[in-house]
Image (cartoon, rainbow over the protein chains, first blue to last red):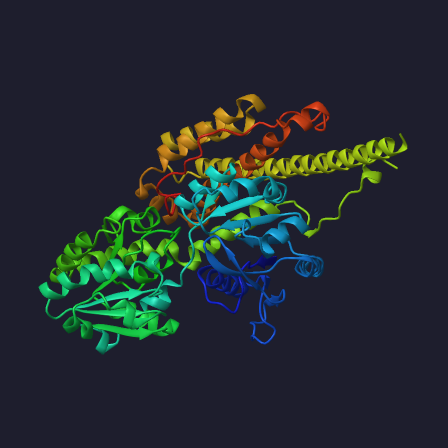
Length: 383
Length: 180
């Protein structure tokens, strides 16, 4: 099958959507499909052979954070050329509501279009105003995919219609086979994520930490991620600061090894998560998971069966649960075993098959994707 | 006088372009519904045929075979206005027979059973998928057709008002790899 995938965010910047597209493309290529990914990218960035650059992305403030997006006349022309040269059987757009390549593709293409909605934003005034502008383009999408039941609910609420739920994929074996590292073992808590992004929840963990460290004198916290380390530990008593270790940005291999090594992986995120890929990675590595009870997290953790949940933003509840887990090896082993079995449904083998099933459903008997030639008034009137 | 006339003509042309564009949108939506409906029909037929094959294969006990055969036969023969009910009954029959994982083990153990089980699992998971895509396109078309401009100018022509396909398509637990 000839598959075109559209990435709305700049390929140079690491992000969940970009990683998902990279893994999906590589999975499909391994299965023998022809894949082309259209993504914004700087000219000098080295790109994998399957990525086509749509030019530089412009940083704009959108949806509460600065995103690097592609839009305008030149981008639209590039999208048209890519569609025309590609003669794809199906085009898969990611995040079609963000004002970037995805929306442009929707606008310029006709034929089988599949779209994945990653984020689930609460209804905003801007979204309501944008609705009539988006609607004619979004109408062309033949199949919608939401990454979680939660994302599907928000999608239905905002745009109407329906979507199938296919979770994000993870290479489970990559994490399951990683080698644990000696110096990261022994009563360790793990946290991975941006340090200076409050939504990732490190401040909540820092509030809970004094109690955990007092009750478990051997415990340590390992933090992997970008951000100001001094500022992060500023709220801790001075003598405890040495028991928080910052690893900075880690490679994929080190991330897997870290998840394999820690005794408990903590995900104290306070909101804005529609899926929680990091939890799936932690489960794949067999790490016992302790996470806030966000809708999306509860779903990934099978409502608490595959990992422990605590009340969101409640540092006391987090501390109690962490202390209990660190002291109960049997419970940890049980969580790890249940998590490893549960996580198989997120493996690329399953997720990839589901996505291909969607492609096949919409391409059955349909013509290939092409650029949408505007029908003029003249031709419609038969002149 | 001439100026008013020019402006009126310009306004009329603009309205015409807008209506023509809307008609194009509607046209596209209708063909999307047709494609989605064809895909749904294909998946439903596939499901009924696999079920019938399994029912006549002799792998299952006679009671289960009869239940499945009857339901699959009814689903394939159903008239258009009875189709949703018949397909729902097939879903219920499949759930009743393949409710326990052990039953699937029996099918898989039979010669060629692995393939039949795989095909059935694929069919019962693709029916809900195709149905959601179909109903999603119906919803989009209905939203546009209810708009004043479409009703007043009869932009939809004689195309029938699109109807969603409502049925019970819950797959049997033993065949659904994950909760949808």
